[in-house]
Length: 134
Image (cartoon, rainbow, N blue to C red; front, side, top):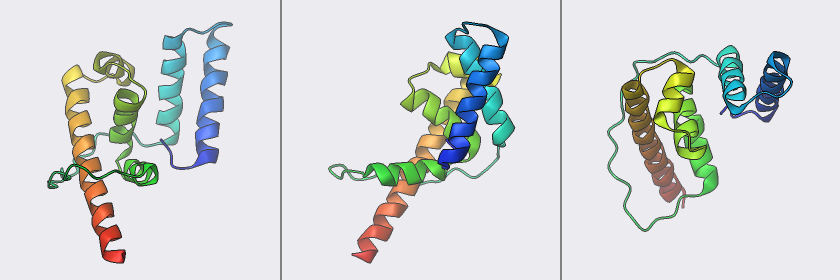
């Protein structure tokens, strides 16, 4: 989420300190809420009106390196990155993400689509740059 291992560790530590300060045995909802609060304190999670990229679809049959995907994810605006990671990586439901972020379900799904489009555009750009370097 942060692109920085030390900052990620700080967020993780703060999440568990916050959750365990609320209860001796916090449930997953308490831990999730603590995580979102920690992320809000470390990152700007504002809805940004950034233009949506219009990339051509990546042709099939090409593998994407994990490092390229990680780099592309770091290029996402923070709120898009968070929603993408919660939905597509961690497997949270859109409803759960909407509840955690105090957004509508429609807003979360819309942001998810925009994040995927940005990732597609970023990956296409990385692949084009790599082909030119070769």
